[in-house]
Image (tube, rainbow, N blue to C red; front, side, top):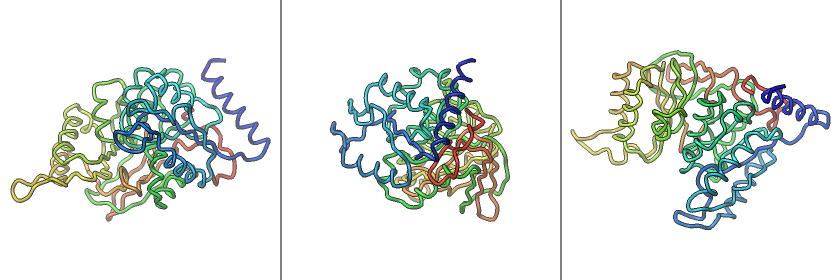
Length: 344
């Protein structure tokens, strides 16, 4: 038996033992690949009160929480040194009893781990990873190097927003074997099918020219960002276009870009997000849909990344459907432990 078969066997054995004892509480393991959870910018003290608050909120959704060794560590601004963060991430992804791996928070630091991870090992077996912002580097690299889809969705720290819509979207995505979202949007009407991929625009751009950015043609590119002015969004999108990435897609979905127009100017010198997106639409010849509630906003939706999706915009309604999302084997509210997914 090769190592991949062995890993899958351990997963099936774990499921069988759980099923024989009745349904178990789904396990969500929190790891910290990026910033530490500190009391404030420039602080070197772990924010224990916030940690307990957000952990309690996620536990109340029905998850049994586990934590890797580094979630309480503070080293400069990171949750431990690079070797520790890489080890803890790997242990979480490969734990046969973990149903879902959630990043503690985003921020910065995930790209420092990419050259340290054993991608062959992670390709053999890994639980799905969920996170936003800086975690995009990991979801993209897992797709490029290990062929593993994942989720763009809340980190543990996100639950400090106390937003019922975000909680509901997250739990619906984890429970249902088929992903479907319908939401108001604006832009060119279209219908397309392809791999849904993307995440934080700054992180996507940082991976251009590396082996950690998946080479996807005919896909649906989705992006978000925060506190990036329209001219910088324009520069990043043009970089993606000039690198031959955007032009090979079928459509672009635009999530939240909060703060993009804060300093857009006025009069003839105004340059805002609308100007940027119209330039990209004409340059790449692609339909662009705006208004997807995804990104650095309290009510963010949860999106499967790296999966074949059917996407359409009709009469002001954006529909995203994924038949085989990377759902965890067990989730709160699921009646029975699910079989290993196609991507294990």
